Length: 263
Image 1 (cartoon, rainbow, N blue to C red):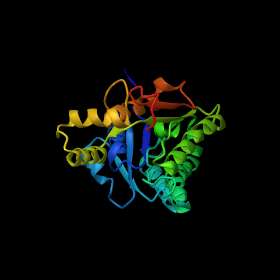
Image 2: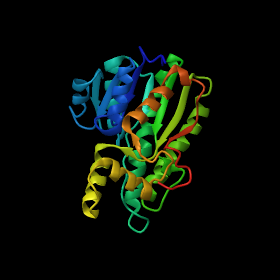
Image 3: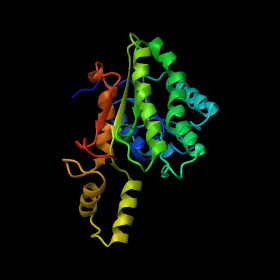
Image 4: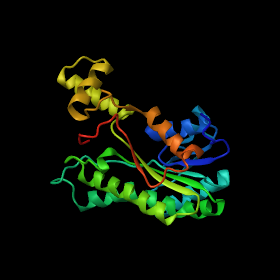
């Protein structure tokens, strides 16, 4: 299927590692001009060196100045941004009794304001172009939170809420706004964490056994596994494409059908 991404310019925040890196690479493989992002000078250069991604920029998205720097660098590198992927985000492993006001503010700074700043900075030029895609990376926990990370899930819920209001704000501009909400993703960090648990619990050390046990306990779903980064990236590519022009203001889950559980 031709997605029509050739000639489009995409900025993927937080794409120096993890799922964001795979998203950047997949978009580049589809023919888009892609700008990777890291927080420190040179931190995303390896993405360019190892793939078809063309540019790398850096800046701290948790500050106004850092976001402005990223936007300026990206526009200087490629001339415009057609697709903004607000991939950057992070979680704090603190329950209700442990998360203080600073933890809550930190989660909103990293998961909400980082995206809101980039949207404010880049939507004006998208309006001039007469089209654009804004995609937020959320989590199934934004609508089915558990008790383990209240500040994180609340901030991701706000991120999904933004997409709905922004889609209405941008009505008639040719810009669509959507959220993609995965369940567990097999990132190197998640896999290392699960393998460490397997070692502590005395399980067999092959990934299939580990995954089956983790899914049964933490993320039961009809597919019996967790998502790969490539699967999430492929969905991002589709939503960013011309084929998805009529999908707008949505929170799209990619969770193997885990509709009756909390993440």
